[in-house]
Structures are given as structure tokens and as C-alpha cells.
Image 1 (spheres, rainbow, N blue to C red):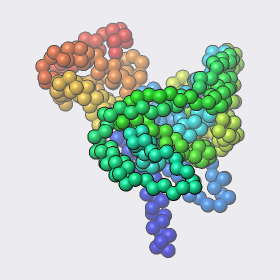
Image 2: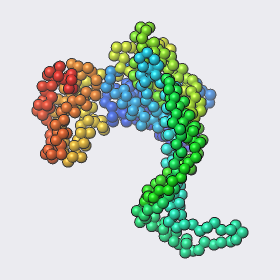
Image 3: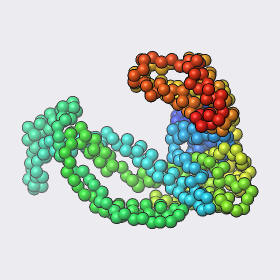
Image 4: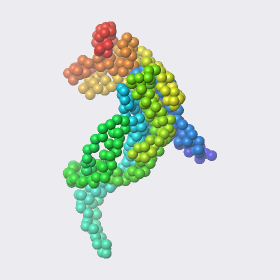
Amino acid sequence: MEERASMISVKYDAFPTPEEIVARLDNYIIGQSEAKKAVAIALRNRWRRQRVEGKIKEEIYPNNIILIGPTGVGKTEIARRLAGLARAPFIKVEASRFTEVGYVGRDVESMVRDLVEISVNIVRQEKTESVQDKAKLYAEERVLDILIPPLPRPDPNKVVTVPEKTLDTREKMRAMLHAGKLDERVVEIEVSRQGFAPIIEIFGQGGIEELGMAVEEAFGSRLPKRKKKRKMPVSEAIKYLQSEEAEKLIDMDEVINEARLRAENSGIIFVDEIDKIAGGGTTAGPDVSREGVQRDLLPIVEGSNVMTKYGMIKTNHVLFIAAGAFHNKKPSDLIPELQGRFPIRVELSALSEDDFRRILVEPENSLIKQYIALLASDGVELEFSEDAIDTIAQIASKVNETTENIGARRLHTVMTKLLEDLLYNAPATAKKAKITRVYVDEKLGEIVRNVDVSRYIL
């Protein structure tokens, strides 16, 4: 019983809990606790399902999510940061890329093909990293063969012993190689070059471009690889040969099989701007195209088979997270069938003045930290006073209220205008600069007071 408990503990600790996921998202995103909580639970449920045994596992479907909120409140940022935590195939697409005015754009199934491609790249990279040590040994042997040419192949009918002097010389060269004494020595190696496939252009809409790519890849994989001799330092040659040897050590069939399983069972597709394909009650014009995209999207979200160049992929257990501003529409404008495939809806709140202040200083990638780092590279020490930060947050909030509300992105426009002169003159300015409330009022006060001007500048 104790052994069973320890095994569960090891597996449990292998993936972050919902609370830990939210804590990591808090390092980059201020507020929006409900959205973070919903996403964290959905992500953890992916992990939980993998550990379910029996037939019930196939019956557990993901609860897809719609994030509703104005632009700039963190919907896309949550998705982007989630990609780093998921340890799973993840892709972000814009729903609007699948539609244009009056006609359907890219094939909706292309999002699944892209997801599988990402999954293959992830698994290939993992496998490559796992064989790096062995690949480096093989690469070193190939370099040593160039520095000390091996003896000619002996007659199998004769017993030939390798002279000890040759072995000693090889070991000495190996020791010098490990010590870095041969790094600058130039050697000549053969590099592979893939023969060029004929250029094929296929014109059309939808997924036809994927057909063109598939034809080109089919030609490319069958063209013979040509060898070309290049001279390079030993250090560079080892890196190149190590990459070549690692590729030989990887079983691509195994990579593809594992990648397909990951895409099917752990894949996450973030569909942004889903409100752009929601109808507004009309039956003519671009709305016809939008409803068509929704109906194309429906079987993918519901669960269907999609053919990719790596084989058939089932989308039954892919998690879909959709997001949209819905400022002049509402989720009920989506077709009822699609609404039912997104049972969890989370509304993100607009950002307050206090949120702006926290965004400026708290996240690991906050704007103030970014500008301090940028100016430090010019030898300028940048400092912000507390009242200056308060004023910047107040200005950003006020401009959002009087003009278009673009959320946290307003801070970028305000900070860029505020520091414009300092960034321009940075190399020639004093080595220390302090941003105070007086400085902020001097640079931005008049612009903020003039609404017509602030519309264009901020």
C-alpha cells in the first residue's frame, strides 16, 4: 500500500496543480483570477484523464472554454503563457484567418494539421536532446578519423593488430580535443545538401496550399542528398556532426507515433477572435461566410477525424479554448451547436487604475523593468518614483475612458511617448535619469487634457 502511495505521489508531482498553474500565471498576468482558475482546471484535467484506467477514459471529454472580455485584458497573454506550462502541443489561431469578406479563407482543418506539426517538432526535439551525449561521442570519433586517418580495412583472413603507437596518438588527440586545444584547427568535412525540388505553385482557396506543400515534400524526400566538402574549425565541425549523428539515432516512426498520441490526448488549440465569426442576425454579406466557418469549425470541436501527412488524427480529446471581445456581439450570436461545444464561459473584467499600476511594476516582464533593462545597455540608470508610477497608471486609465479602451496595451503608447526623448538621447545623456510626477505631467499633461490630440498620439 505504501509503495502504491509513493508511486501516486511521484506521478502527482510530475505536473503542476491548478493552484500552482495560477501562481505561475500570476507572475505575468495581473488579476483575472476566474479565467486563470478555469484554464488551470482544464489543463490539469488533461493530465488527470491520462491516468484514468478502463473504458471510461475514452468517454471523458474536455470542457471547452470561452474567454469573454475587452481587448487588452489578458486573454491572449493567458493563452501564450499557458503554452509554456502545458508541456503539450499548443497552437494559437485567429478565427478570422478562416474567413474573409464574402468567402471562406483557409481550411479550418489546417489548425489540426498545424497542431500535429508542432507536436512532431516537440517530440523530435526531446528525442534529440536525449541522444546528444551519444551523438557527441560519434561526432568526436569522426573528427578524430579526419585528424588521424584510420588504418586501411584489413583482410578478414589475416589477423592484424593495431600498433600501440597509433592508439596512443589517437588517445592523445582525444585528450587535446576534450581540452579545447584543437578547437581552432581547420578540418574538411562532407556536408549533406538536399537536392532542390521543382517549384510547384497551386492556386486556389481553402486547404489547397497544404496540397502544394505535400507535393513538394514528396519530391524533396525522394531526391538524393548531395555531398559537399566544407572547411571549418574543429569546434564548429563537432557541432555539425553531432547534429547529423543525433538525426541518425532518432527513430522518426517512433517520434511520429508519440507525437500523434500527444496531439490527440494532450493537444490544446486556442481560437482567438471567435466573436469575429459570430453572426449579427443578418443573412447576407459577410455573415454568410462567418456562419459557414462556424459550421466548418463545429465537427472539429465536436470530435472528428482529420487527415494529416502523419496519418489520421482524432480531435475528440483536443481541448479548445476560445476568446473574443464580444463588445458589439454576444456568445449567443454563435450558432447553437457551437455554443453547446463551449460549456464553460468566463468573463474577464476591464482593467482599473489600480490594475494598471500593478501591471507596471509586478509582472516579471513589466514595462518598467523592460525600459530599465533597455537603457542599462546604454549605461543609463533609469529610476521611477512612486508618484510617477501612480500618474502613469492614472493617465492610461483616463485615456482608455475618453477614447477607445484598448486595455493594458494603452500602457505601451503612454510609456513610449513618455520616454521618447530619453530613449532618443540616451547615449549622450547623464548616466542617471529619474522619472518623477513633474516629468510625467510635463511630457503628457497637455496631451491628455486635449482629447482630440490624445486620440492620435496616445
